[in-house]
Length: 331
Image (cartoon, rainbow, N blue to C red; front, side, top):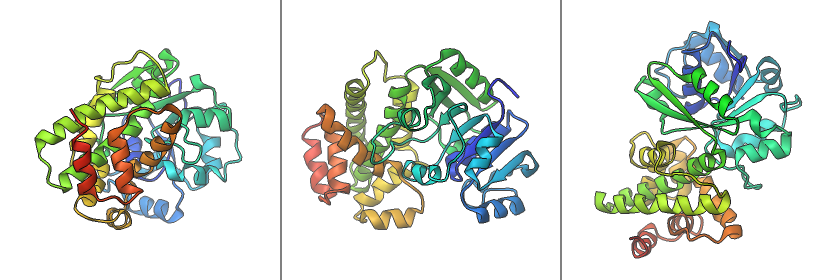
């Protein structure tokens, strides 16, 4: 057990499952919180997550399962949060235990709705967790490829560089290469915005736009991400690094990307509700689009791609019309 003590994974989805797999490849045991008791019981019987990444076999004797968020906080030193951002506050609503003395890792690639805060700001303001006691986990890394043990790269954002480097050692394995940065805010906003751009890429795919347009769309997307990130959190950063650009590319092009899939359905004519029902998974970019759109009321940054996705998803403007209009703004 390293300097981070006992790890706990909070969440029952594919990214939580991938993180549990990665941690069990380098740690003796973990605590794992899932909200639904029946999911835990099924997991214990089958030795795998019944709902997500079910090809991954787990040694359940090395996992302490619980559906009680207070129990997981009592038993663990490091809490890795990996549930969809719209559900975070519902999970936290029954929290009684103090978490300000724990180390927190956010693997949530979203913004807290209503408050429109990035995760580290939310945990600091609402739960008094010091910034140097938190880290953010970003890609480019798909849960499905972790399940297949394909070589994957992670980036940990941490204000304390030494803790960030130590955290990488907790994850590094034969198929995981972890790096660190102190650009926590940039990493969070990049992880949020790339999902919006992946929806845009999916919409264009559904509308049968070609590779030429997609290349222009994504080169404009990284510029849009740069403008917004520097307005919201000014810092000297290079968005061409894999944690930003690489994550944008894999989320926008990969067959495993749920945000791209969601966008493709919208481009093909599905309503938002129909696409969400058919996917049976959360496309974080749907919620992120509204959050970034609202946050931009403060910054007034030129965000043509985000605005186009917002108009399609929330103002119910025809995807074909909106993307044709967007095409006139790209260079």
